[in-house]
Image (cartoon, one colour):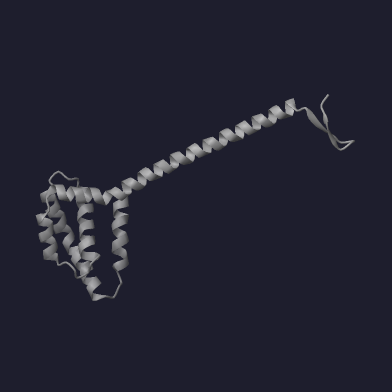
Length: 155
């Protein structure tokens, strides 16, 4: 599990502690007791899957079925459901869980590229303006006569 995966999971788990609700407390107990068996089932179905992916997938599935819907699914029904999933289905679920992060990363990279391009454009405009000012100072044909208070042609 990557640090981002752990933070994502903790965002669902931590708020449920100290709820003083027996249903939520039981769902936390079911969640904790179901972790190892869920990991074992996923390892059995997806033999070549990375251990971090196994833990992330199992944790997210438990969160979605046990924690997010307290009392909706029993541990046995959840285990039965996991047992009927194929390797391709589990990998598709994992890919779908990671998709928002990949989309966000690509959007961040795109935004950074746009920001760099805008900064370069601004710098180019500043340089062009400074060049124009310098050229105007050298080539100006009008000067301000302080005695008369008027603009006059440069001689």
